[in-house]
Image 1 (cartoon, helix red, strand yellow):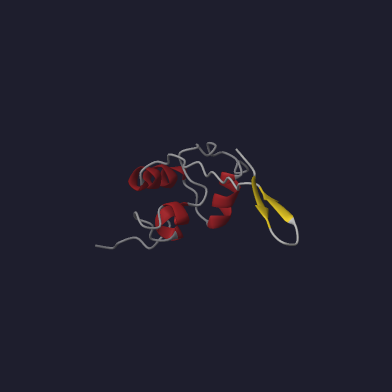
Image 2 (cartoon, rainbow, N blue to C red; image 1 turned 90 degrees about the vertical axis):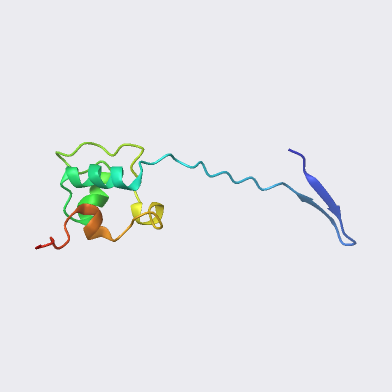
Length: 94
């Protein structure tokens, strides 16, 4: 990549191009991730945070295709809140 040089009356400014690349990860579809997470039996956001850091004993490590921040990743594709995600919400009585 080339530097761009701009001359002004006071000085010469050398600008380096800014390159930002965010790699998009391929996460499970919402319904698949939801079923996977619920099967783990995680009961709270505190347990969730421990799990994503690999510190929750007795539970398999987090795979790369399950997001650490599902509230952002699945915001427009099914996210209904942490109780729904973990399966700890009020059960339907009907």
